[in-house]
Image (cartoon, rainbow over all chains, first blue to last red; front, side):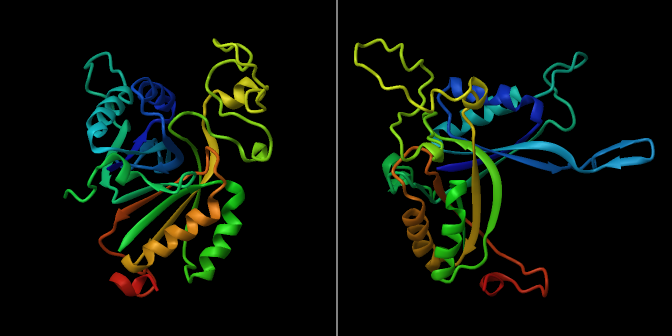
Length: 123
Length: 144
């Protein structure tokens, strides 16, 4: 079982969510965050904007779905550039994947790891 | 060291805080988030006591079978309100020692359980280290 933290452009989040739902991945949490990457934000004239609003999606998935979800997020969140299609633009975001050892559903108080049989400890 | 991420109902936050304090967990981070679950059937807490069915994306009175349906208050919400499927919830992040994880999870489940969709979920992730910013303490002693 893995946890995906995806930081994406807010204007693309609905597109990403719809694409994920179409393939059956519908459980997720959405956070509004601000931040900047290695480019230190946007500099317009004298002013540097370093806290750019982004949207963060958190998904917890069985190992088998992770590659699919990452592929969907990375294609749908990419900015379409006319001159070099498929390359994206600075500020499109990042996807982080971490381990989850245990996951519980509060409604049923069951351990989701035991249900899916994912070991969660494969390092 | 483990990081516990719980997504819970907004109304349960105060109760969760006091119950966690009872077992000696006083440090926690709360975030305002919106979330949805596996089958889009999250029940807003104002409807918890009433007759309800999870919103399934279908009109409540237009079912294919002939079973009579009582109108679901969730389905009567404004289209705009229910369409995205995301409902406001609270995310709770606790970093704890390995031995504290089980009691914390038991407390979170016992406090937030209502038995309806939308109760939330708890995730436990491995954590390598923690540093207290005030004096640079590292590891388990930074958590106390």
